[in-house]
Image 1 (cartoon, helix red, strand yellow):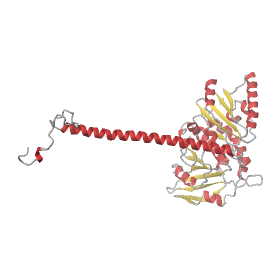
Image 2 (cartoon, rainbow, N blue to C red):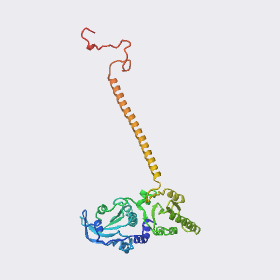
Image 3 (tube, rainbow, N blue to C red):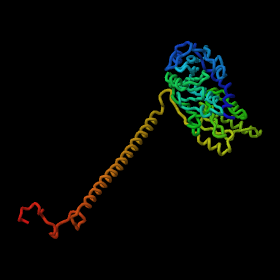
Image 4 (cartoon, rainbow, N blue to C red):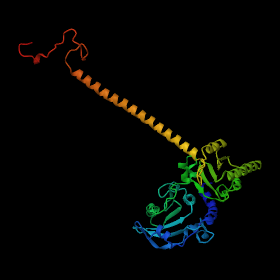
Length: 398
């Protein structure tokens, strides 16, 4: 199953995900007026800002996702508006703001996957054309920057208009947030190429729809506090699930291992390879061999980051570590500088010596005076060299 098919199956999961943690303000709020202004660059807004409708009709988010209420998280908003360019072409801009950057990136990866087809696959890969990351097809561009996702679609049958230009104008007004894609994506093997076609899920509830024929995914207990990334490597599908605590990761690992043994005893489909890496649960499906799947997992490194809410109780060890790193850095810098200076001195000395040697050889070649010393200064031990210059003597004195 390709990523596009998987994204269609995952949409219901995203409905639950976005519906549980988002809210909306009235479309006429100052926040939306700031992000969807009446005029931006050479583009002019047609009419007022509307409530989000297009994405709702596509089923990516459900209607009560953006309804205000005490049970919702305040401060998140959405809206859409039509714009007309200087050449008369109309564009639809849709904007959604979430609580976290990763939520916006998650929706971006799903929309990008849905945009891919046989003819526009290369144009709908994730890139950095606009915002922190974006995807583009013939008549649509979608990007995220910080906690905000923006999608711009052509509304003109005569041509798409300048989609990237309007996207860049909107991006300039957005909060940059962390300014990067989630770290989990960066831990994929060959992540710079893999990220172009990934599916990312922030705070997912279930992953069964990613691989419907693999019931092992039903044994995951995310507690709505786990993230996952799905990437394709040839025919192999790699899924990394990140749990926020080692306790949850350990409990899930025991459940997964037990479930795999049970499925094997029943001759049911199982992952080509599975392994726990730190707080990651890593699955490889449909690989050509178990060895190939293991080599793929070997490339995944779990990097743990610890942040103290108060004062670090190990401040002395931290200070010693920083002192050691600083001292080592100074030593390496001195050695490098000394080496470069030495090489420079030898090089400059050799150059000057070569120039002097060449000039001396040139002068020697031009000299017609016989010398039994090879043109060098000789001692006049045999009195054969005149002591005076006859040309400087008075007439009759030589």
